[in-house]
Length: 551
Image (tube, rainbow, N blue to C red; front, side, top):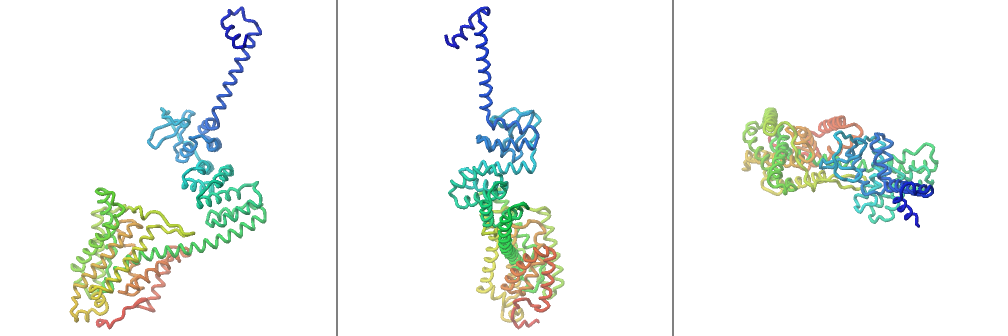
């Protein structure tokens, strides 16, 4: 009879008929079966199930150990756990681990099933070391993703974490990577890990130093500059040479970046000052309300975007193109009204004109505060102006590129208007010699109004551009009025080319001084330089030529 048959037969016999040997055999087999079930359950649990309870221990070391085990388990929910820990959504309560979903529901971390969680839940605590471990785990779990951008982000995360445990996965990812820029990022991440690996060979670390030298950014420089003091002398020398090369390249790119910032600032000053160059040059009016024309253009953009958001949200990306003509008309119309209502009675009286336009600027600011409130207003950026263009170590944001292109476009259009139209001819005539222009039949009063409206309208479209890089508030124009006058006087009153050169010169000089002297002191030094220059050339860089009867 087999053992199974004996066991079954024994169950049917009376107790007194059991033999001692049969009972012992049955007990031993039952005990072995229980042991097998226990070990089988433990084997089925796996590292993922064993690691999860460690999150509830409220220990940073246990959290880091659990994180490492889960990331290396290959479990399908490993990435979900790591993301929840990174976002502060991994919760513990009564010894169990839960995840808070974006919808607000609570699910079991082990299974993902929605559960009735305890009333008191608290997030798993993290410190800087755990955060670095989270970053490394994210990189490890996404290095083999099917999404190229995810692999690129993972490579960057590994570069920062320098986790040696990820090397096998990193080598596998490099071997199968087909995108050149992603492979470069993976190799640089591997180089950062190798450089920090104590048991790596000197030749491998030299190769890593060469790869990091090619990367050539601040992160690579930090790695090369922080070798341990007891490192191999050859490595220290190679790292120092690579770091010196990186510093030279960074200095070059930083200089180019400052030049770009200067061009960007110069384009902003050009937009703000080009309208003032017309009004100040044609009529000699010190218009302190010019900044408020810029502010009105910015608020016109805000109103256009608000209407589009409520009525036709699909046109949001075209909102700036709709706002440009409206801002020109609104600001230009207000400018003509100011000239006809106030300024035309004050020609030849510069002090009274300055005081009157300053009072008008206060009235306009208070009017905007009354209508829109004193707080900043949100003006959105269209999608086509978001992001940046990376060229080597140079970062060119699309909104700044758009403003530079727009500023030069406005300059070119205004230059054509002034050079090839009847209005431009009359404005140039009045600018050069008002009395002679009047004696030739030019209606100087009408030209004054149109020129003032044109300058104010250009200031309005400058406000459309400035709304993308500055706060839209009642004080927006005050930040540009002084700089606008400096640009006009420095370049030459009434000369558009002088305004362009003056704006770019002041913008680039300002940004080149800032790293050495600071923003405030740099502007003071620039102002002193302009004062000294004007003493030598009172009429600016490009003085208008004319007989100037009234001079």
